Every structure is written in C-alpha cells, then in structure tokens.
Length: 110
Image 1 (cartoon, rainbow, N blue to C red):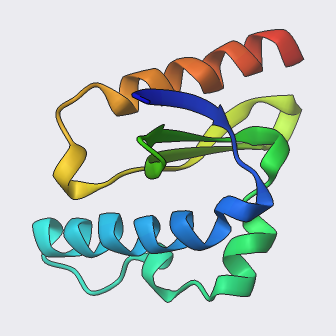
Image 2 (cartoon, one colour):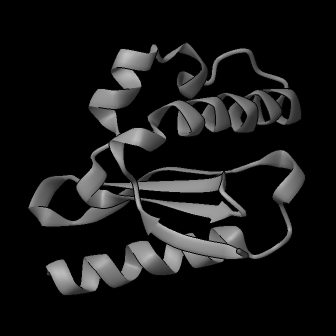
Image 3 (cartoon, rainbow, N blue to C red):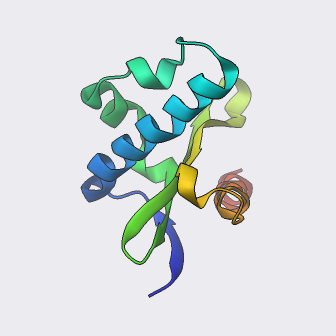
C-alpha cells in the first residue's frame, strides 16, 4: 500500500490525537519541560483546533504516521499550527512532504 499524503478526515481524529500525544511527550522529554500545550489539550479541544480544510495526514499502510495543521493569522498569512511525526517514523522525510502539502495549499489559497 505504501505511504500517502491526504487531507485530514473526521475519521482520522482518534489516530491523530494519539499521534499528537506520542509526538509531544517525546518533545517534553527532549526539552525537559512538562509544559507542552499539545499535551494539555482535550480531545474536544483538539477536534475544534484541527480544521480539516487546512490539515493533512501522512499514512503508511493504513497507519497515520504524521500530520500537519495550518492556521491563518493576521493579514491572511498562514502559519504551521502543529506538525507531528510518529517517533518511530522520524528521519524518513515525512515532515518535508507534509510541509510541502501545506505550502502548496497556501500558495493556491493566496
């Protein structure tokens, strides 16, 4: 089946929420800080924040291994809200492909 990049779908929320926790627990450990906003987020807050029209997932053989979400702030300039990759899948270029998908969307959206 291989790897694919696609828009976030509401059916993905559970897997992406679990991925977010795994990714940011690792970040908290690396930076030696217990304060990582993504770890305090409830599932309902997560769903509200993850806008499917500006979020993508990387899937490999049916498993979501990465995700990215954009948010538009002042002056219509998009910014990466969250970028996450499963700890066991890092170093495989997943972040780069997700960033490219987000950048392509931003260019088309103006």
